[in-house]
Structure formats: C-alpha cells, structure tokens
Image (cartoon, rainbow, N blue to C red; front, side, top):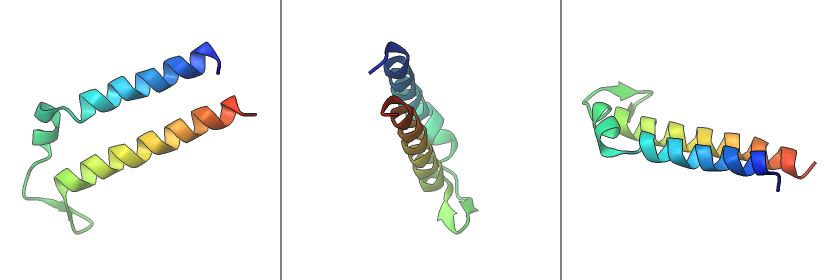
Length: 64
C-alpha cells in the first residue's frame, strides 16, 4: 500500500475519533428527529457510512 493511502486512512481514523468524541456527539443529543430517527442516531450512522464509503474509494484506488 502506498504511503499516501495509509496517511489518508489514518486521517479518516483521527477524524472519526474527533467526530465521535463526547462533546460533539452531545450537540446532536436533542429531541429533534430527522427522517423519523433521533438526531444522535442519524449523526452517528451518517458519519459511519460516510467513513465506509471514503475508505472504500481509497482502498479501491490502491488495488487498481
């Protein structure tokens, strides 16, 4: 794996750690709903699926 792909994956891990840190998650711990889901669940799963998609494209380029 190229060094830049490793760096991108490490950067994604650090960003996920910061996004799922307690102070930021508590911002979305409100009584509102988005598409019928509580805001905190929507935030957590949206960030999670975006991280999976971004990681997929990084690794897809690696295997080309």
